[in-house]
Image 1 (tube, one colour):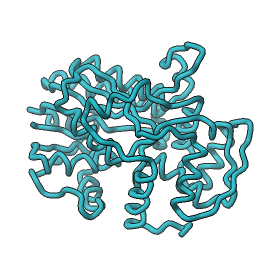
Image 2 (cartoon, rainbow, N blue to C red):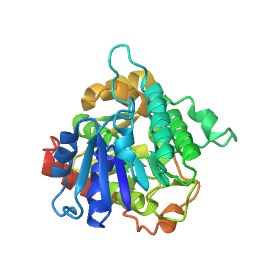
Image 3 (cartoon, rainbow, N blue to C red):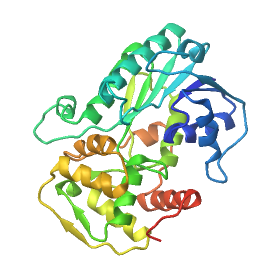
Image 4 (tube, rainbow, N blue to C red):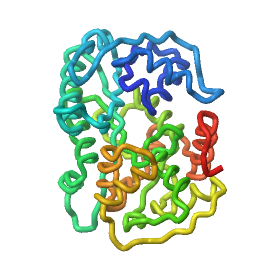
Length: 327
């Protein structure tokens, strides 16, 4: 197939591109800085599929629309793997507005080019027992509301599209996983807000890659699939599990409140992350992030790694790239 990958220099895109090339697809990447795509691919773990079909990198920007026509020309399937939570330039729109504009420009260009399917990687939405709709409750989280809005835009513009929704992806370059590791690494005592009791089903980055690959031609057009790993864990259990696999002893103190604004800034400072990234992530911790069912892996024919295997693999990859201070 003729395939376009946006966000090819990012976490999910850089893992997906070699798999697509190894399977013989004609792969094109859209990037604001083409050199960053080659840099990202060069950082892949040893043993990752390399070579295969050649890679065509097109310079462009979904936010301005530059390069979209060239990138989408003669493309059958387009992967939309772009998220814009990074700090905006002075005077520019907030990330949710940038996300909406970029998705609308891309969706319009894809429909005009005759793209058969867009595959989008978004986020799981919280569920509550009071019957409130996910979308209405997600609005209180800018991050989750933005993901839902982008999904809607893409699926409405190209009806045969497929959206995959994940919570925490376990991988060495996953921003959410890196945040948890840095907190475990740098806090001698884990002080956990009330959100530590919420449950989710973290998923291995290797499994996400295989699901993205399968979604290109699976007979599931017009679907939103909630993808998740096999283990249901609280955030507190995840952090304890990460600490154990890092071979560090971290006692914990559990608070009865969230204090999102304060804890997000404190967590960002400890982890060395941008508060503009951490704040919207923590705003999403308002309840369980669990899939409605576990059908996605079977529908896409992808066997799942458990949480321990996912973390061990991610930490091995991390240490290949950079040292872990806790060790």
